[in-house]
Length: 469
Image 1 (cartoon, helix red, strand yellow):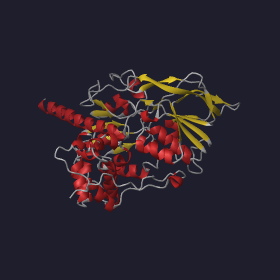
Image 2 (image 1 turned 45 degrees about the horizontal axis):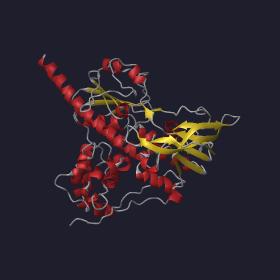
Image 3 (image 1 turned 30 degrees about the vertical axis):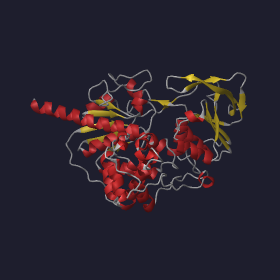
Image 4 (image 1 turned 90 degrees about the vertical axis):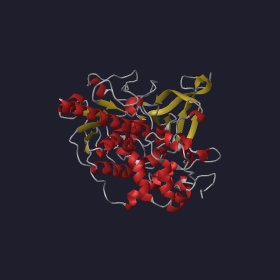
């Protein structure tokens, strides 16, 4: 009999007054009993609407059925057929707007906690299974993947399972992309990411770090070295700024730099080689998940007051509701309908305040959100000594500037065929934030999966042509 409770099993979490002083994971995960009880809420619908909301098409009812039966390793096998990073997805994917938004149980109550169950299964597998995945027989064909983020790792994993010799080229000294430099430890422990990467290397994927494609090697040189196809999953790591006075002051960071110092370089540890300025009053400009991450990190670094400064209303914030709620619980202030116009500095060129104006909402803009309009006579100064700009990113132009034949749009993103991920240059595919601009981990993974299928089809056709000749 299904569990007809209208509410999900609650996720155990660290208490806010404790977690805001440490970088340990906030969500503690389901127990075995909670997972089985939650799985029993699934009705195993015949038409499986939840699958249509998953960018990597996981057979969600099938894996949940195995959880309900207590067959956790079998559930992991189902997850692993579609996802190379299940422990990651279970933590950071916006299930509430994807698979869970299609769940029938959500019509008259809360949907099944699909993401929490995915996390439980992946964590159970990692805790109880020491055997590495078996490397498939090689087909002798080589593919290069640029970028070791979610799209690149997914593409590499899917191709490796098909027998391709895959080499990943990563600019940083650790593989993982945004999973290691962008998402904080308290949301996504780096040991979890490393475990997923270890599984890929066991499949035969080679990870080459400290390799900046466009500098160390070019795309052309990759082909010259014998790679038969290239996937570009280089992300969108170039930060945007507002262009207001004072953005060059000491104590103004892009969210990318701020989070990279904290997450990848461990600036929160005493004696870190990459320190971060001690600040007492921090303003984070923006309303997305990255802004929430930066604000919560600033709080953990010892700031007395941290404010989210967002020019629209809270209802229009793009951040996940769970991240907003966690930030509020941890004491982050939300200054909505507020927009900076100048960052003020002192004689030493450090931040000494931020001049802002109040906003009001007008008519909807191109995105459908109501456009913010400055409220006359509303200017005020916010007392801050650090500002983090979290208003978006765009792809680094390095690859496109050093590679002939790659079409990009006005935002600098690679133009691809949506169904295949194929770029304007033969044998080159792209996906993730390098194509869409900053988006979600799971959408990047879906793009990597699509490209892997297309690369396999492309190389099979090349092989057939070569054999015919």
